Image (tube, rainbow, N blue to C red):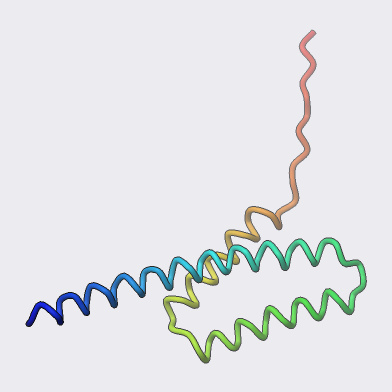
Length: 97
């Protein structure tokens, strides 16, 4: 194995790691955007269009991206749903008497 091949393997590994991290960040951002739009838009046609757009993006990613990138994207969307999609608990203030 030559030095050039070692450098090539290292660069490929770094590019794949950056790709996976980028897809996770993209999933987080798109998850937040979809949840925000679903909450703000009250017209059901717009909500269906947003949902179908996200579903179409996931289908296209299944064809054109690798499994690692698609998994990172799914993890990003899952984290976004857990962070911003879950109903918030109301904070009850206890009165000290």
